[in-house]
Figure 1 (tube, rainbow, N blue to C red):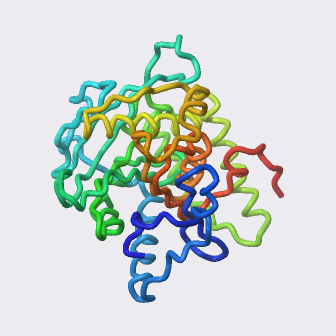
Figure 2 (cartoon, rainbow, N blue to C red; figure 1 turned 180 degrees about the horizontal axis):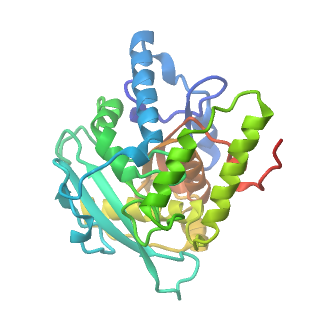
Length: 329
């Protein structure tokens, strides 16, 4: 494995850490789903990559604790646009606010939501022969801020995926999260949010004691009940996956000057579902962690013909995110 994004030949199995989703559909798709020989590089280099990845995951879990001063960049200074219009921000990054439909399933609904996007340019110009395109990152959550994590670890991630090819790294705040608007906030104030955080710090770790598990389960249920006061009808994983497709197309339009049709959920399945590689449609290159693996799987299920390369690390159980709440203890 020369680098992570240069491999696209299989789905990792057994104890392997990287799950590659098929990048093609049709009769030759089986060739793309064989067991990856991905970890064939020398053990020292491989372990180095894994260690760096694990360190990034610890940082991703603490995304909410990352603080960026408003003096560094004022997101409200960007006028939301249906096109991707970048502004210089945060000393070497580029930021944009992308306007997308609130309800992808109802074209008659003209309401919109704004997605905050941050990109770290590649180490080479985009017209350089070694430029490999854009890699979209999702740090997990659900509810993790992609923009904050990119500011914190963007350079490390770029180094991680770079090799023969050099990539732009892009992330975004899913609808309702962090700098995306309108916010989906379960707490009436920052003071209330902070109080809950301190309460959580005072709780004991979960081990084999059923009483401790009950405490954590009760806290999680109370948090869920609190969030029922917020209108989350349009904040599904499927909606975020559709937002990602819009980002993929807008990145390609900005880079190539070519416009693409943006169908709704059903149309996208019919038009794009079995698209061949030579049709000129832009395809996602994606790196997702934890809940980001569910988002990646959802994207690949909805738009299988729009995947070029996809790495899913720390694969999450979709039942735990979409199934019924199980009884506890």
